[in-house]
Image (cartoon, rainbow, N blue to C red):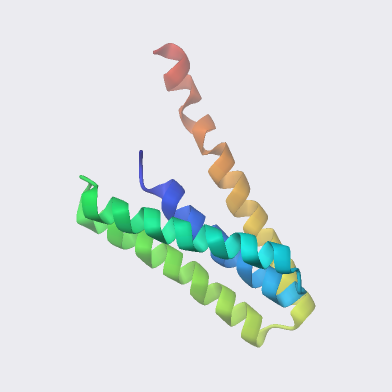
Amino acid sequence: LPMPPYSTMVAGGLVWSTYGMLSGAQTVLVANLFSVFLGALYCAIYFRFGSGPSYAYTWHAIGALAAGLGCAVSAAWLPRDVALLGLGLAGNAMCMILSGSPLAVIRKVMIA
């Protein structure tokens, strides 16, 4: 499997964990903390045993860390309502991109 599902799992988990923390929704927080932990574990295993170029792994790690930094900044410096709206929209956009990514290759799959 390619790396993006695992790094996106970390980034999405960070977004939704921050959302859960700010909104006080403990179920959202706890469920997504598991997502962050498991995504980071999958990434570590992929980094150790994957056969792709190391620069690709670096960019995935940078992207996941940037998502975490963006969450921290929005939680710390934005008004609560604005931060919740931004985090919710970012989390939904990430879910749509991740869920829709197989559609990018559907033509190739259908022809094969």
